[in-house]
Amino acid sequence: MLPSRVLPSRMLPSRRFLSALFVLLAMALAMSPLYAQRADDSERKSKNASAEGTIDGVEVRIDYGAPHTRDREVWGGLVPYDQVWRTGADEATTITFSADVTIEGQKLAAGTYSLFTIPSEGQWTFIFNRVAKQWGHYKYDAAEDALRVEVNAQEHEKAEVLTFAIEDDMVMLHWDTLAVGFQVAKG
Image (cartoon, rainbow, N blue to C red):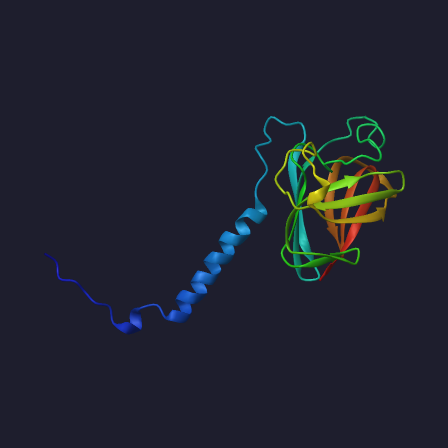
C-alpha cells in the first residue's frame, strides 16, 4: 500500500480562488444557451450567418439564415407587407444582449430573443419575442413579445444576400434595396 501524502496548506487553492473559479463556471454555463447554434446548413440554400459587436459596452449577437434575392421581388412579394416575418430564413432569427438595453428608447432585459419584423412600405415594426428557439414564425405568439418598436426603412444600395450588421449604435438589416435598423443603448 502506498503512503498517502498530505499537501502543505500553501499548495492548496485558496477559498478566494475557488470562489472565483465557481463564479466563472456558473457564468459560462449561464451564457451557453444564449449563444445556441442554428442547425446544420450544409443542405440549405440560405446559409447560417451571424453578426456581433459591442454597443455602449453591451455585447450584441444576431444569428440568422441569410437568404438571397435570386432575382425575386422581395418586398411585397417574397416577404409580404403587413405580416409577421421571421426576418431571415429557416429558424427564427435570434438576437442576444449581454446586459439590459434600451431599443429606440424602450427598455429590454438582457437575454436572447427571437427577432421578427412586420415590414410595411416605409415603416417597419421590430419584434423582440421571448421564445428564442422556434422554426420560422409559424408558432409565433404575440403574447410572448417582450418589446415592439417602429422604425423607418430607407432605400439602400442593392444587397443580394440578407445581412445584419452592427453600425455604431445601430443594429442594421440590409437586403435587396432596403436598409432598416434600430438604435441600441445600455439601459
